[in-house]
Image 1 (cartoon, helix red, strand yellow):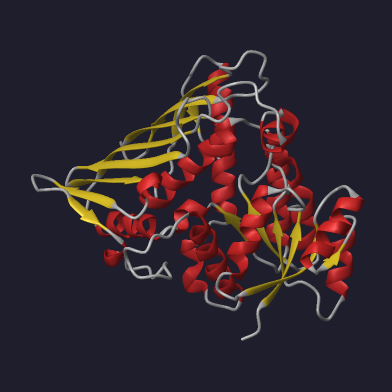
Image 2 (cartoon, one colour):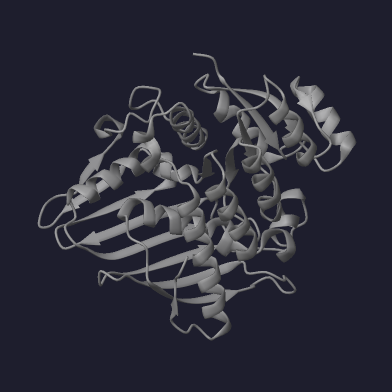
Length: 364
């Protein structure tokens, strides 16, 4: 089966996430990168395309028009730009009938998210959102265990995502756009808080109905939140919390999820991502590894570590299957609904924080 022809918007020379997507997309041989508008700077766009040996374009709009007109044009495009540049390329390619694989969060603003939603609903093409952590094998196994009732009725949900890399005033390519409200829309809340939100939502299959949030800018003069503390209420009666911080000194990438039900508990941590701890009520803790994973989301035998890149690769592999007609995979891949949920989380948390933590409805 021929690889799916892939394009890319953003991800040129020096970009972090673009390189991650390119590695993941080719890991299983399901995609071949053939074209890109890799930078808003024409010279950098041309040189980046030449380095990769692909067709290069000065703009995503030009690329969408040209590729849609080619018999060998791209069939899908990865959007790997800063948040404020997700909407316009997504809309352009969806309108051209080209599938879109967009990095998270969905957009920088609710208005931009609505533009994407309208384009998705009007297009014959599919839209995918790359929340990569939900594609890790033991996260998928955790979701299956919850669905089977291993925990009983969920009572408590707690997710954390702690980093310390922005503990001081920092200036580099990655920090500058993430701390600019115009480009990011939200700080730690949007950059890593949406990962914690989506992880909890994916595993539990529940979305909180209300939240109370306190957003802070700990670094003096920073115009965007770098610490977010959010309390959650679920319609089921469950309670929860999310703590997302980029000023937690000493923390590198501390994503974790803990669930407590009336029959048992689950705990998973990214920094030990190949272990899932299941604790039945009144029973000893059980440590599950990829040997117990039923999703088949791994490439090497258990005990041979897999991780960050493989999570992205799992999404790309499943996206390829969906594009080729296997709709049984759709529940494993985040899409528009997950993106809109993340944007509703950001909007509600910002509104709550402006009102001193008032409980606020979460409405996509």
